[in-house]
Structure formats: C-alpha cells, structure tokens
Length: 401
Image (tube, rainbow, N blue to C red; front, side):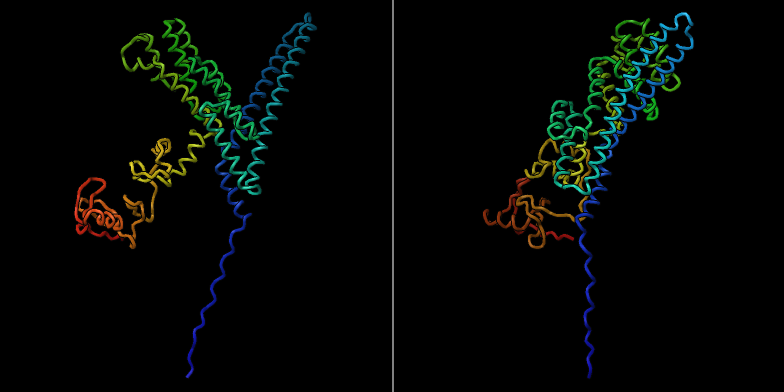
C-alpha cells in the first residue's frame, strides 16, 4: 500500500531589504515637500529685486529721453552734461542692483545644492543643519535678531536662512510700533501687484489709520484732504469701512460710542503689525507659525491623550511641561487603533496577565495593585481618587474585548 506524502511547498522568497540609497532617496523626496520655504523665500526676493531694477531703469531712461527731446539747442551742451551725469548715476544704481540679484541667485543655488545632499550626504549632518535653520527661523520670528545672526555665522548657514528678509520686516514693524505708517506704505508700494493678487487690505488699513491720526490730532482740514486723495479710490471696494472711519470727524477721539472709540485705541497699531506679518509671510511663502512650533506640534499629536491635562501625567511625558501643553491645546487627541489600559496606581499595562478590576464606585485599577493594597490593609481597598473603602471581594474583574 502506497502512501502519498505531502511535501511542503517552498516558502516565497523574502523581499530584499531596502538599500541605504533607496532610503536616502525617500528621505530626499520627503525633504523637498517639507522645505518649501527654504527655496521659495530667496526666489521671491530675487523676483522682487529684478522688478525693482527694471522699474528703476525704465523710469530713468524715460525721463532722460523726454528731457533730451524737449531741450532747446541753446543750452544743449549744458543739458547733455547733466544727462550724462544722470546716466552715470543710473549705471551705479544698476550695478548695485546687479550685485543684489547675484546675491539672491547665490542663495537660491546654495539652497538647491543643500536639498541635493539629502540623498547623498550624511544623515546626522543633514539633521543637525536642519535643526539649526529651524532655530534661526524661530529666533528671527521672536525678534532675537542678534542671536539668530550669531548662530547662522558660527554654523556657516548664512545662505540657508532668511535674516535679510526678516530685517527688512523689522524696519516696518519698528515704525508701526512708533505709530508711523510711511515705511509700511513704501513696502506696500514695492509689492503692490503681489498684494493685489492676494487681495490684501493692508494698504487700505494703513491709510485709514493715518486718517484717524489726523482726526486724533484735531487736524480735520488735512484729514478731509487726505481722505479725498488716498481714501476715495477705495470707496468702490470698502465703502462701509470708509463711511465708519470718516464718521470719526464727528465723534472725535474722546467719544464713548463703542464702534468709533475702538478706532482711536492703541490696539489698532498692534492689529496693523499682525496684518503686516501675515502679508509678509504670505508674500514670501513662509509658514504663519514658526517652523519649530510646527515640528513640535507634529510630534505632540502622537502623544496627546485626555490624560495629559491631568496631574497624573508622568514626568517623562513632554506634555507634563506647561510650554508643550500650550502648544498642544489646538491639537486633536491621538487616535489609538489598539487601546491600552494603564493602571493609575502602578503605571503598568493591564492585560490578561494583570487584568483590570472595577471598584464599586466605577474606577478601574490593575489586579496586581489591588492585591498588594489588600495585603497591606487586611483585605481592604482604598480608592486613591475618591478615598472610598471597600473589600477586595467587591472588586469585579473587567474583560477587554
């Protein structure tokens, strides 16, 4: 009698482990998605510099050609001498503009080269420089300009951070803090086309504030003239706000009428600073929040649970610190696909080896913790949360489905 013996089929070959090169390529692709701001800022600065140089050249050349054609032959020699001098001045300005463009091109090239090293360079060195760039970004946004500059210089990452852009913004912010709108209006004029595309209201709000300052100084004649020249063109878009602000000519700065009283408050300047910061970040493709906050919040989303706000949060948990809890406030709780029960008393996992038990008051603790407590107290259990006392036999085992 023959017996058939089943031989096991050979196991399928295990897929080869991903190579280090493939891992670096994956990381490089992820880095490009995360480093949008790294490339966008110098590119926007370059575009702005090119536009400014182009406008300057067009304006000066048009003025020279117009002046040359209108001049009489009697004073032609003197006038040509002045035109030559003016053209020399234009040449100097264009050379300065070319140097500024070359600086921006150098920064773009340095940042592209930096991204290229994500797939070929050393992992530790890449992460170290990224951390330093994130810290410089945070310092600049928090107005620690000297510390940011020092860190960039000592780390050799001047071309990888945006100190110049933030220093330009600082000049505008300082002027707004001193209740001056001229530098902010000049910034709006330089970036008028891009601000218009993003539907920014910053220039209009600056004009309104300047009008309010005239009213506050009781210079109503100048306020009316200012409104006719600078506010009237905005009437077709922002008529309601325009009507409300012009009514301050009647209510004045000492009014108690709430809708008009707030227009004279100092908080309006803080609001303008916030508006400028938002438009500045949007213009350069920067994130509204510091990069450090974004990276920390990305990590905290995996740690935040309903228990993090209670006093039982262990000290090794980052959310036991007030600063991290504040960062995590707007974040949702982490989604746990496989729930884990941790004993309130021992901080150990409750499972089939150490099952959970329910006290008569509804609180749940591990069997191990309750047994140790019962041994020390003649079979009595004291709930550490409410102080209620019961017998160990009254504790009912809970089953996890």
